[in-house]
Amino acid sequence: IGLTSLCAWHLGATLSLRDGASRGLLVPVYIVHVAYLAIVMKTHPPFRLALALHAPSMLFVLLALLSRLRVSTERGPATLAIAAIAVSTTAALIQVRKIALHPRWFDHNATFHLTQALAFAVLYRAGRGLIRAA
Image (cartoon, rainbow, N blue to C red):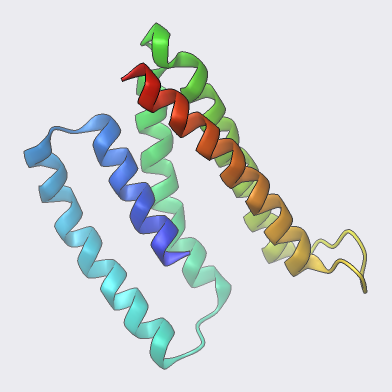
């Protein structure tokens, strides 16, 4: 989750900021993520800590994608990426609320991972479209 959050910060910076501004933003992001890694390596923090780390990065990417809706060649892939973020958010809610497709054979953790895999597949397709548009 921490690595995904770090990647999201990079994606948002790439989509919305110039090089100098993105470097200024990413330095504190690296510091926070290294601290998070240290916490995860030494303790067993609650899942909510991972969500607290992840949510701001997703919001940043969402705002960057919303700004891309104005560009006609990027509108389709940006919309697809926004849908992927919605599916990813749903996956997090599935995990926190412990929603399961089946209590024994497909518990909340398996349901979360399946939903998150779907989000990543959609995000991958959106990313390819944004690269082509650029």
